[in-house]
Image (cartoon, rainbow, N blue to C red; front, top):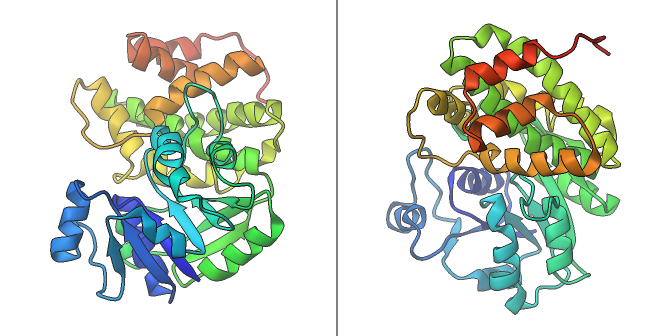
Length: 319
């Protein structure tokens, strides 16, 4: 199986390293002007890992034409531009696109698999690769469990068999809607966890996990997915890595935000909070935690006041 990974950031480079480790033929693509790609071309390394010489490096997307599988790991809000501007002219057909990224398109509220499906040839298939784990931990040899999902059963089976290895145990996803929404929404819960850390309220993370999963399950169900997906690897199963880990960009962003500090790394939950705000209105679903995060990030609401407001909501049964 010939694989091209688009995106030479921390996750794209880790995926490249992992797939090479399990014996796949893999090429890593990065833009010629990218600082990350410059480092790989000069040293084959970034600040986390080193790629073996047998891994091909490319600054041309024409490498995707010879690939069987195209893995994409870029900023979620940049996916449509990548598909329409960069990949569409190549007229790629009979490819499997695997999205190793989470998010919801803010302007349309669409899931990422929907964007790929509507911007590429009908002969192409789409899958998502989701779940817990950090680059630093995988590279250190710490294993984890993840999920691959697709609307096409044969594609799902092919990828799970090809990508399984000693570091990742893959499960077959059974709900593309639920897995994509759950995977994206967990980043917003991660920002809320960062708020708690920044305000010295970390003990509330247990309640955050419980109630956060519950509200995302309601949204998944309203959108036509299986609410139980929120309790799987895409969402609740990813909370340790997102809500607690020192490596979590979303948690770190939330903590720095309430402390008035600038956070330089990508936190997908920032844009996802805006997308969920739109979906909550469209599907008439209450998302109190996500809405609290949105109000702090976009409306200038005080974080402590927003969290206190969650405590003063009307009393109700847990389930």
